[in-house]
Image 1: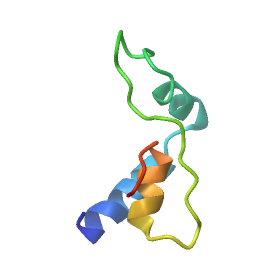
Image 2: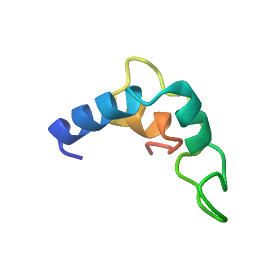
Image 3: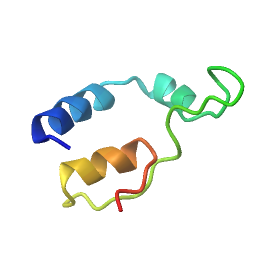
Length: 62
């Protein structure tokens, strides 16, 4: 991913309020079969920002 896009998406995602992030992680909260984010995937803090972003939204970076 483009580095500028990753940085922009990281700041946007980190600004999501905790209660809304919890709703994003709840399967079906936005309708049947809709899953926005999965459970957070643990990623080391020293990993590249793109990997940390993917982990934050519940995706495995590899």
